[in-house]
Amino acid sequence: MLQLSSVRKIFLKLFSLVIFVLIFLFPKETLAIEDPLMSPNNIFGIHILNESELNDAANLVNSSGGDWGYVTIVIQKGERDTLRWQKAFDEARRLHLIPIVRIASAQQNSGWEKLNLDEIDGWVSFLNSLNWVVKNRYLVVGNEPNHAKEWGGDVNPKEYAFYLKIFSEKLKEKSSDFFILPAGLDFSAKNTKETMDAVLFLNKMLESDSDYFNYLDGWTSHSYPNPDFLGSEKAKGRGTIGSFIWELDYLKKLGLNKELPVFITETGWAHTANDGKTGIPESHVGSKFSYAFQNVWTDSRIVAVTPFLLNYNHPPFDVFSWKKTDGSFYSFYEEVRNLIKIRGNPKRINSVQILASFTPFLVGKYSMYNGALWVKNTGQTIINEDILISINSPSGLFETTNLYNYPNILPFHNSLLLYKLKSPKENGFYFIDLVLTKENEVISNKKFIKMLVFSLKDWRNIFHKISLKY
Image 1 (tube, rainbow, N blue to C red):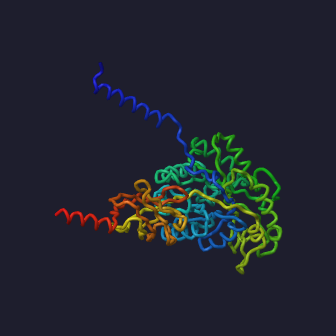
Image 2: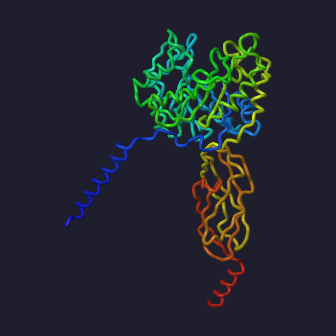
Image 3: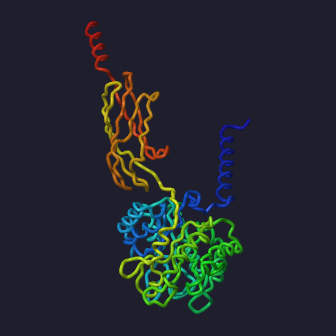
């Protein structure tokens, strides 16, 4: 017969073999934990320059029945201020806006520096220090690197692919909630001294790293109506407002074997703006956007469409601006605002820590008492009246009337929650525990409470019997 030690050794070897197979032989999934298309989703969004424009953005994308629209916003490396951007994220949270953050280097001459590998750790630390608005942390790595001016005066697919790989891996080490999106490419660019055809750029990236797609959770598209940002809203194929469809089809030919949700972070028509002659009449832009949202951007793979640009009043981007120099909006802002939208419901983290409880220890039976919990909001939602108290007690003997004060508790803030507790009809020493719930989901730790339930009449009888005996 085998000895116990031999059996133990055999078991450990088999266990180690199973672990090895699970870790090294099965392919790893790189998709983000939450699929944004599995919940009600409002695709309407807008590209903004800074956080001062959040209110105007919300009025546009959350109008006409809509909620939880998107904003694309750029953060440059010199702007990595946690206090500033946490305040911006908290404002976006209040306005029900989902941020898509595009990271950028710093401007140089007429272009941008290369994104530097040595600065990745700083970016990761900064981005992970923020309490994001929703569970998915949408992040676009760079911008149109098939333009030399966007990559330090050079077009280098191999460098960009390697940068994205390292950035993606380091972000995922911190949190699987980071949702990695590649830089949008200019699919209308030609092979010149300053630009590279996006198809050639993609092929060269894959030549340098065949696993490139494994570092992505979605696809970024700049589906502009070309040529010259003046194309028809009904045109199809590469270089149109439906370019994303052509792009996804081409990615399949390159070997992409998973579905990538689409983020159209730039699109829009050049209009006449201030000079009266640059683009199409601004009065025609609204109907083009209406057609696009109702006929082209209805594709089930689209998560967000954030046209470029809400407010920019200087060349060369004033021709894309939705806002005039006098502070009013062009007519197409109102036309898009009036388009019917849906109420999005993105996955957000609900989490509360009960730090302390304040409940009387001695209580009379079958009576109502006040209780209080000192809590900290450790999640992403604003705590208010949709939070309930759930009590676990022997045979359900205790009852609670739930909260009767409803403070709005922001993430990372503390507050007092008040409730009423009804004691049981029987005397005794009880252990009960409380938790907070939202939509039948427990969102807090348990708080254990001891209570001695008594009746003054019963205790008098006990003392009377004792006195008679002695």
